[in-house]
Amino acid sequence: MDNFEPQIVAFCCEYCGYAAADLAGSMRLSYPANVKIVKIPCTGRVDIVFMMKAFENGADGVYLVGCLEGNCHFLTGNLKARKRMEYVKKLLDECGIGGERVAMYNMSSAQGQRFAEVAREMTEKIKALGPNPAKQRTAVSG
Amino acid sequence: MIVANRKPFEEIMEMLKSYTKILLLGCKECVTVCSVGGTKEVEVLASEIRLARAKEGLPVEIKEYTLERQCDPEYAAEIKSFVNDYDVVMSMACGCGVQTVAEMYHNKYVVPGVNTTFFGSSEEQGVWKEMCQGCGNCVLDKTLGLCPVARCAKSLFNGPCGGSQPGGACEINKDIPCVWQLIVQKMKDMNMLDKYMEIQPMKNWSTSRDGGPRKRVREDLKI
Figure 1 (tube, helix red, strand yellow):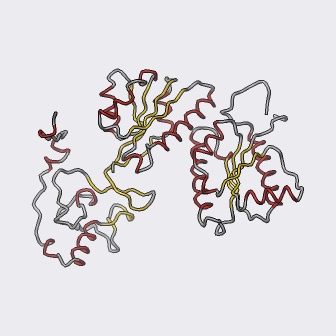
Figure 2 (cartoon, rainbow over the protein chains, first blue to last red):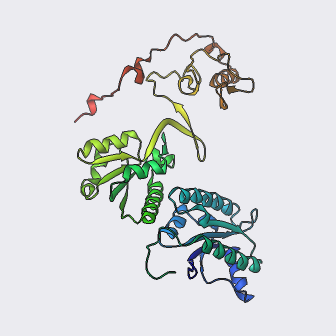
Figure 3 (tube, rainbow over the protein chains, first blue to last red):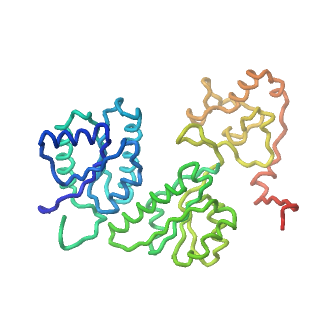
């Protein structure tokens, strides 16, 4: 589908992920508008249900952006988040949506470039996977 | 607590296949503690079912509701006002809960969402292990709090057997400790080895499930 524009939700932690996003903005780096950023205090705040509900509400992809492992502001929040993300991968495979649609990235608040790179990478990946199979099929795409 | 495992998703979808309106019923007791059937797990399973149905283009309406317990009729009665709005009730509680609900709502199809497994306790966060078999005649005083019925593969009463491994494992599985090694070690640590020298007679299994389905009655509590 050439005109498929995925809707991607990125849960970004306040200390690193969101700061990196903010830096990307300050540096005037371009990244796809498909990525909708949700700021959370720590990726450890992300519950399994947040990720599932995003897909239920039409997201084509979801990813978490947290601090580098060992550098989480809340010490181990990002480690817990990764485990929950892995569990959601399993659930999505079970219900037929596909675990490849969820991912987690770690970066520091100085990595504005990396934030933009990840946004591009995820958008490309989800574009290739196609729309969320649970989305209502309508005549208008995207 | 009673520990259970969620049924495989394909099995759950197969059970729910002909139904559009589903009541997904959780329980705040044992299945919450072992993270398989509480409010959170009901929410997650409901989400999975909606996604799977949406993918097939099939309609579904799921009500998520969690009872304090499903094994007491007073709590099961809470759903009386809306249970008939749904075609099927999937209970995430243990077998006791599923049956109490099924008994109360005689004409309702009540199906299990979990496989009830054992009585156990938490070993660490996220890990639960079998501790008790409900044998009906507790000998934990004789074994210093370590159960030979539930935790010995052969339920020996005068163990260990010849299969007890050096290093402490049971011969059936290297990840299962030989409970008799643990018992003897504890007796040594507490200087109570004289208990080990008391030979236990053959167990009378009639107090266990082996003697048929059991009941307990307290006449003083009956209304």
